[in-house]
Figure 1 (cartoon, rainbow, N blue to C red):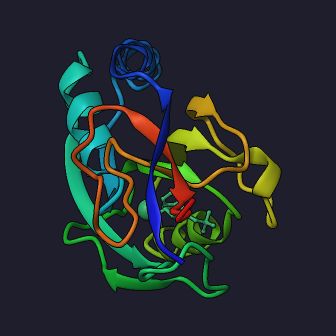
Figure 2: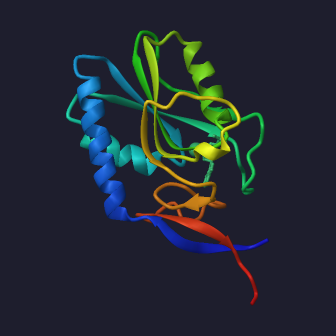
Length: 178
Ligand code: IMP
Ligand code: MG
């Protein structure tokens, strides 16, 4: 099956406005704390870049990579850690920055791995929540948008490494020859 870019789902201006709102709440919640943003590569990179620059408080950042999809649009059941964090997480206030929570497996697995390093707290900030698709519960403290059960690309999210650079979020649709 081949796919093409579908209709825009969330416009660039809407994303930017929501990112500013999230950054404001996070700045209040983490004032006087020891905030370490953990950006989940690659999908969250663009969200992290905008969110972190909108914060009004000191924050450190690090990057982890989890493999969960390859080129397919169906998730594997056991996501793998392909790049662990490079800094010590002990006694830090960790905020995971994710692009999208779908089945929930990736974030549950990631939380378990991070908790093994004894952080002070772990919270999750995701741009998108595909809530209908959840298979395992995962608490989301900060959410940009709840979206329906459609595969989306743009603003960091990809299909086969394509479309990450789009400033908006769009659906991906099967390419029909009709
Ligand atoms: P989960 O483990 O099913 O929650 O999947 C989380 C990861 O799957 C996300 O971090 C994305 O990388 C990827 N993913 C899930 N849904 C989509 C989508 O609609 N578009 C692009 N990537 C997705
Ligand atoms: Mg991801």
